[in-house]
Amino acid sequence: MRRVERILAAAQVSLEAGEFGQALGLLATASDAPPLLLKAAKRLEPLDPDLARETYLTAWMAAMFAGRLAGAGDLLEVSRAARALPASPDPPRPVDLVLDGLARMVTDGPAAAAPTLRQAVSGYTGADIAVADELRWGWLAQAAASALWDDAAWRAMLSRQVRLAREAGALDQLPILLGALGTAVVWAGDFAEAATLIAEADAVCQATGTRSAPFTAMMLAAFRGDRAEAEPLIEATVADATAAGQGIAVAYARWVAAILGNGLGRPAEALAAARQASEDTSTVYVSMWALPELAEAAVRSGDRAAAFAERAQRELAATGETVRKRTPQARAELTAQEASIARLAVDGRTNPEIGAQLFLSARTVEWHLRKVFAKLGISSRRELGQALAAAAPQKESFVPVDLVTDVTWGPSPGGQEPSQYDNATVRTGPGAAGGQAPEGSGR
Image 1 (spheres, rainbow, N blue to C red):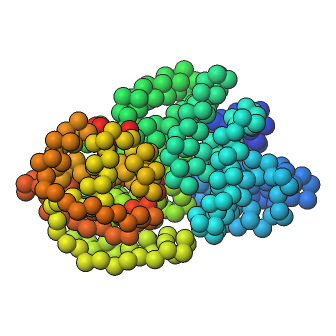
Image 2: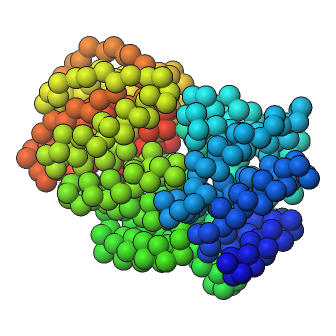
Image 3: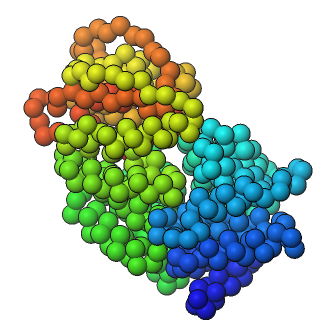
């Protein structure tokens, strides 16, 4: 107990000094941190309401990093306690909006939290935010953008955080921020930039003597299908993070393992990893990111995706949406939505521009383009126009979709080894992701 109290005291000093990265590293070493921070926040309520709210946000952060390894003081308990607080001051501080939005997302679901989360994102992307406040709480503010599946704001906020940390010489923060930005960059298909971020993070860790989970490195290796590089990183991350009580790193590694398994045509391995990642809902975003991998692996392994359907029902219920049942049908041709997206891409539209026209997120557009590439047997946008011209004419129609509604699988093209790009019609909502981005599909 005394060791944990010393860690918490050191973390609090780091936070007060604006050394967010160092505080985060200290909190990540103590799985007992969430309940102790929760206790401290409750004691502060009658003495200093503003500091109490900041301590609740720190507890929320610690609980998310601990994930299912948190034990007492897990993310739901912290979020409920934060929601029970008196109303924040009027007007609320940006940090109050972050706490209110993230806590409500856990207790009431993303739909209920969305308005507050949007306010939080606006507060931390405006010109009025102080650099000290952004360095201290900006990392959690970008989590609000991620919760909204606002890819543009998410990456912009992460890029700004990295720039501010570089300018301030905040080397303790950089590895964490670079890892988060690396996730966004790999997802966008910018592998060269991801490699640059990995090299920078490694250099900072070597210079400061700190350690950080290789989030970007293992994700990049998985997206490239490099099993020899990815598996040792995944295994080491799971072992180290479990020992340190960092449940979010364990879940992230399992999610990356699922991407790797699906990409290499190993659905049984992918299914086991995706189930583990998606079941740890305390990690919030990682558990949602794992759902497309779970659906794909379940169908390919012969499991009719019962686990996915059960989890999806819970997620959709939280937003008030319903699932439309559909009988799977094998099809090799492009769907109407894929054809619409492909033609807009041929016209030179970027993913965000296509998404704006079709009421989809850029990430959803990227997902569909991956399927288009696989069905047409191409690997880049440069080949798309010619491939579409050679394909049979198809009637175009489009129905906007907001959430995952069904997954329809067809046979692998040419009888080849199945991969995660084979004929799948995945109806998915803003931000749904997972899987690899072939060169040229992203931006």
